[in-house]
Length: 148
Image (cartoon, rainbow, N blue to C red; front, side):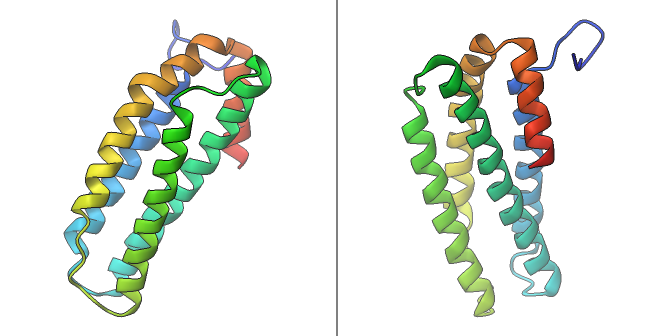
């Protein structure tokens, strides 16, 4: 079993909170440089966009594990998936603006949506997954997402 510390087993919330913090930091970096219109701006956005796509894919692995175990879908999951789609559309619009070399990019709506989305996952979704999945199942999820 993988341990985060000597006493604490691996948790879903621990894995994904760390990723949320990383994504939030990436968004902050992009916000700082979005008006530059430089190669760095586009690289920061590409990294942010890729991180979000990967994060959503990893969550799908997690959701399928839950469904396989319980035969059910978590009630809040439909909302979370809809938000994933909205976030991806916003990323596409930002990408379009960058490709047109438009430096007047407003990311406040994306930031607000990501904050709300993160809070729902952190308070409702991940704790439920930690409650239902065994230590062994959490470890299996961990390794699946690490190789995804």
